Image (cartoon, rainbow, N blue to C red; front, side, top):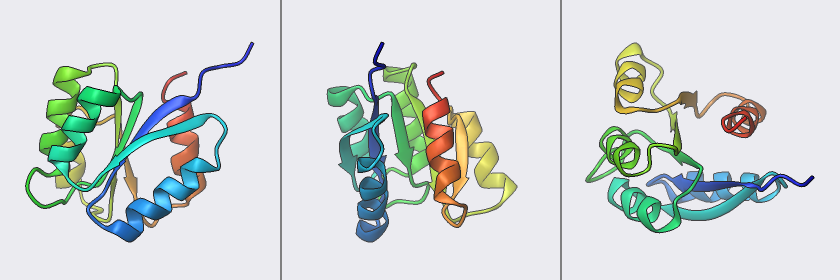
Amino acid sequence: MLMKPLRLLVVDDNDLARTKLCSLFACEEEIELVGQGRNGEEAVLQNQVLRPDIVVMDIKMPGMDGIEATKAIKQSNPDAKVVICSAYDDEEHRVKAKAAGAGAYFLKGDPVEDLIRDIKSAKK
């Protein structure tokens, strides 16, 4: 029996980082990239329209940041799993992300294989 691919939304204000993440996920059969955004506002709107299973989101973005966007996404789509993907490796950001409803916190310098594994296991 074939499993439905995980529907993924990628949000990062850095065009290069977002494009790299999208390219990475496009190569994965178990993941369907359904959308992308540049900031928290776009993340919330895309979430409402696309209803992704997983949102991979930067934490620091102009306007609405990843923490506020995570709160809004979890309120409107509680089943969505949010993975914060950040360059900030400190306890304060991790605690805020978890309190907002993020299920995982991934550092941008970590191996991408770890991120892919975490995303694939998020819906099991």
